Every structure is written in structure tokens, then in C-alpha cells.
Image 1 (cartoon, one colour):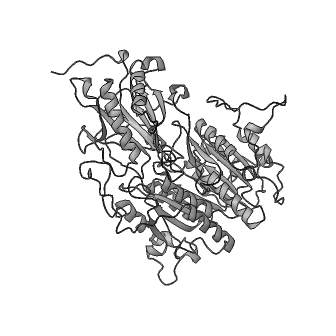
Image 2 (spheres, one colour):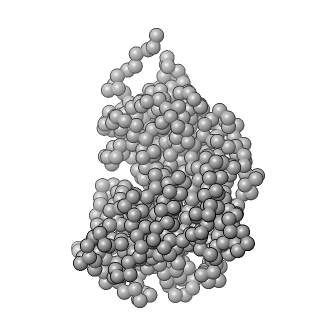
Image 3 (cartoon, one colour):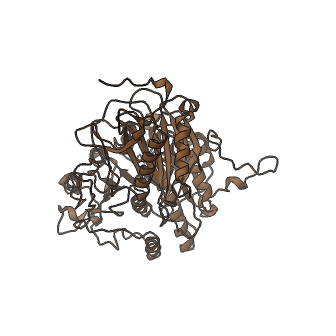
Length: 614
């Protein structure tokens, strides 16, 4: 006979946890978020998700796991057909190559032989998290990518300089697979399932892990090899704390854990089945107090958040920002900007639990390196699906330093980023204000003065949107910029907008380079259609919409000036479909490189970086 469950209105229950870690120094930090929400339809396996700059499908990220098991994603990186020392192409000077080599000494590239890479996890076989335990690049999606880029329909669109003249159709000449990070301990964020250890008593605490294959049973994975060690330690503490304070836990629920890699500390988000924070008591206070007591040396917890979500459906997080409540610790996780010198203050990235964050930040730094090196010197760059601006800011810093080294001070002329989440823009503004002024062209906000001559406050305003601008305002600011003036400081802006809205508002007007990092489903159809339009020689060059006011909208090519398209894909099926459309269009696109990274070792996913030129 089943025991009756206590009504939902009387208490909030623990569903699971989310943990994430930052990675910007040798020491790694962990952030953990624990989810307490209402129950959903029972899944058979956990689908891991990550916070950060847009590498995970927004729809899947916001949903509890369904009956498909997916442990993560991996990225692959195509090669140019040359050796590892000259793949970047002939167009770069020796000084630029020297600068890149210096960057590689700060962040050494990891090239693990694919035949020897092995995870050797004790849970492999019973845990659904990984599909391979050794030879981690030998997965179906990698083989599909090799076949695709070796096909005649793709090879004929590759720039001639990137092909070996003797072997036109061998995939090794163009596409290679790389492992950008260690195959163990790489996961700095994990979404885990939680279930009561006993249906008879809450004294047993929570069982946290993944769902076993073809069952609703939560499998504990305390010795997971792909988890950052701080994640495993945090999970053990949560299990013990939930037992001591008798936290109520629903069956078949999930949660998320994050790690800050600079401090090895954990950011924990507790998701409660409640509408307001006061409805989470007393169980929230009991659990948080016990977790803090267990961390007497303050070595584990970076911060603790509470997220209230009493909505129906499968969404783990509610969209309303008012549902997020900081309980303990600082509001942001800080990470080093990829390509920056850890010994010099060159800026940091900011992440809150409300933004997307990479599960393998160390590996994604290699993707950021390829992106910034593919951008020609002195370019005007637009980035869509930008997240907190990781790729764009990394490129801005790299080219600014390169310009200083060359003595001409020529970095990126401007950088425009956009994404839909308003919290991304807040994190972006903080990151820009932490960077050197000569690269951003901005005076840090703490040094700006208002009309009364007093310095503005430096307090964190979670709901303040004064620092955000509309697309029209951004265009007006750039209207008077003289392209021939090499001393013009770069303009760095962020617009809260979907990719389609940003494009049709003029974000890519005047841009030489367009960076897109869409979710797994791929580009929005209207964005793809614009990229497939042929260059209109009659359309005047402009960086603002005002100059095109006399042209009908249906005749405007909103990506007319883009000569380089850098596509960072986390869904290979969508990439292949859209790549076919781009190459078969009259837009003139050609493939320069297709780069594959095994970003999430052990999973059957590939993260692909493709560079198009025209």
C-alpha cells in the first residue's frame, strides 16, 4: 500500500542539483545549484545541461530530462590540410604568428592522441552518462562529420589553398578531430537527478546521480571521472546535509551543479516548488545552514541561490527574474577571458546562474582561440547568440594586444553583440568594464561622473537596465565614425534581442565578420535566408539603418558587407543542413576550415567550428 504524499502547499521538496565550475586559472572552482521544484513525468535518463554562452539548446536547457539520455556534447575541429604550425593561413604576418605562439604558452593547446585517450570510469556500463570509455573520438557523430566533409558536394566548395592537390576527396586533408582538454575532470557543470533513498522516511536523505538505463532508478555516481572533483565533493555534502535536516524530496526529480574553476568553489542553486521565497521555509533555511556549517573552512561553497518555480510543465527554471533569490555568497562567478594573461589584469567574464554557461570552459577556450585567429586584423565584428560575450570579448582582447605588439594600435574597429536574455547583457557590461580601456574605448563605469560631478555608485543593480541600449541608439552612435581614422577607439555594444531582430535592425551592417553560436536547432530561418542572399553591389555601404531608409526592406541585404562567417555549432545535423544551403546559394560562400572538437569526452556529440569566406 502506497503511503499518502503530503500536499504540495505544506512544504517545498528537493528535486535535484546543478553544479558548475569556472576555469580561468590553474586552480579550478566549482559552482553547484540544487533544484527543488514540483515533480514531472518520470524520465528514464538524465540529459545534462550547461550554463554559459549559448552552447546548449535553449529549449532542452530549460526542460527536465525526457526519455532520451544524452550525457553531453563534443566539438570537432576541422583542419586546413596543413601542419599544426601553419594552419592559420598565409595572410597573417610573422609577428601575428609570434603573438599566437605567446598566447599558446599561456594556454597550452591540448593534443591528446585519439588512440590513447581513455576515461576509465568505474561507473561506465551502468551509468548512462557516457557512451564510450576509451578511444573517445570513435563515436558515430564524428564518423558522420568526416563523411560529410569528405563528400564531393562539400569538397567542391572548399577554398583551393586548403586542399591537397593530390588527394581531393580524402577527409584527412580538411577535417581533423581534436581533444581540447583533459578527458577526465572536465565537467564544471552538471545536472543531476535526485530521489529519496527511502519512501518510508526522510531520515535517509537524498540519492543524487543519473537515472539508470531503461529505469526510473537514480544511480549514484560518487566517483564519476568526468566530473570536476569539486562536483563530487559537493554532491556528497548535499546528500549528508539532506539526511541531517530531513529535507523532503520528490521521486524522479532533477537539479543542477556549477563550479567556479578559479577557486574550486561551488555555486549551488536550490530550485523550490514555491511561488515566493517565504514559501520555501523552513526547509530552505535548514538545508543552507547545514551546508554552511559543514564548510567551516569556506573551501566548498562559492554561493547559494534559490529559484522558485511552481509552474506546470517540464521547465526547470521560470523565466521571471523575480524567481531568483541570492541566499549566500557573491552574485557572479568570475572566469578569465580566454587568451588573456592570468598574471595580468586583462578582464574577466561574469556568470550568474541566470545565464548559459559552458560545461567545459577549458575546452571551449580552444574554440575561442580558433575564432579570434580567424578574424582578419582591423575587422568590424558582429556576434549573434552571444551569451555573455565570451567569443567576442576574447577576440577584442586578442586583436587589441596584437595591435599594440605591431605598433599600429589597430585592433577591432568595433564589436556588436546580441542575445535575448537581459542578464547576459548585465554580465557583458561588467566584463567590458573590467578590460583595459585602450581595447574597449570605454571609461569604466566607476570612474564616470554624473551631472553633479559625483561618481556614480558601483552597486550591483539586478533589475537595472540603464546600461542597455536599443539597436537604433547603437547605430546612431556609430554614424559619424570615420573608417580611415586608425586612432578611433573601438565601440563595444550589446543589444538584448533575438538574432533575427538584431539582424533586421542593422547589427551586421558594415560588419566584416559575423560570428554565430546558435543553439542545437541551428540558425533562425530568417537569419539563414539573409546569409544566402547574393551581395548587392548597388546597396550603399553603411553602418547605420538611416542610410537605407530610401530602400524597400525586401531589397535590403542585411548581411551585405559580411565577408567572413564563423559558425560555432553544437548540433551537427542542423549545421550540415544549413551548410548545404549556404554553399548552394548564390551568396558566394566558400569553406576555409571545418574544425572539430571533442568538447565533452565520453558523449556522442560534436562541437563544430566552420569558417566561411566570400
